[in-house]
Length: 449
Image (cartoon, rainbow, N blue to C red; front, side, top):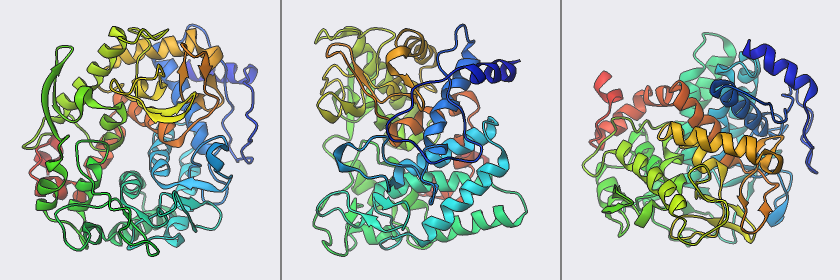
């Protein structure tokens, strides 16, 4: 019944195309406009499916990887693909295959294209740069000195690749090749190199031209937890548990313990910071029952989300539109450019991915936000790749852009809410289970081993 409804609607619905049109894709997914009176389940299908178009129809035609953004602001060119956003896109493609938005054979072929390209692309001690040229695989610098390996973006990419390794398990030539290439990529990442000559910390960047000049140690609590877990999980070039405990867990902004709006926050910045802190690392890493000596990560992520929403309801700066169905502060485009929005850095900008990627934590509140975004604001923020990046009713500003790192978590976290698919895949990885055990984490995945 649901498929018949969507097919009929897709035949008659259309939305305006953006100025930058994607290349024609075999099996392209047609966009749909606003469809009235959808059930919750059907609405989630529509949102996941249309958002996935960003990675499928707008994916780079040569590499299959995700373009950084849909527009050309900040001098981004057509060839710029993002490694971290591509990791999110890989996970989104697995969800799309699972939901039958595309055929399994289509996803296999795209995945094979992606891994073959990555295997030939630039890497620095096995670590990919933030941006690649999607046609050549050569590095596109992210900044004047950021022209080498980006460990955090690589961790996001590997989070997706490890899920793919667990998903494409058929005993045929294509899927065996996918698994083999992912294993080669995974084993060549020199996590230990990125301790900057054996220090008790992982460092974000290294460049053959600039060395350690950026000098950015990765300390918590923020979006980078997955980096330490993967570094501890590696077979060939792992880091010790001391690097986690003495590096990641020793920041001035690691432990919190304060209460905001009645919710205790174990870790992180006051009020929790932008919501991507509780989303990016947890696209694959399942926070349910996940604990270490520092926190219960379900409590951490749930309360972080509830604090963010409560702040928007409180609305101390009296921004137009904020309320129980209009909430979610995180990093996104805004009327000035780009910023990491949070209760401590509130510019009046709501970013749909914030509330929608919180579906596993706050399903009732996220669904109310989704219905408001779709039915009440859809004429302003719903487009060919799902919801546009952000909006500010106070400034009468509505983004036209889409960003890979914001679109991907919407699909993945809705899927984790619905089926737990990506959580189950990632947590089933023997490497991940070993890494979590090494760092003294507790989780159901370790208990099942």
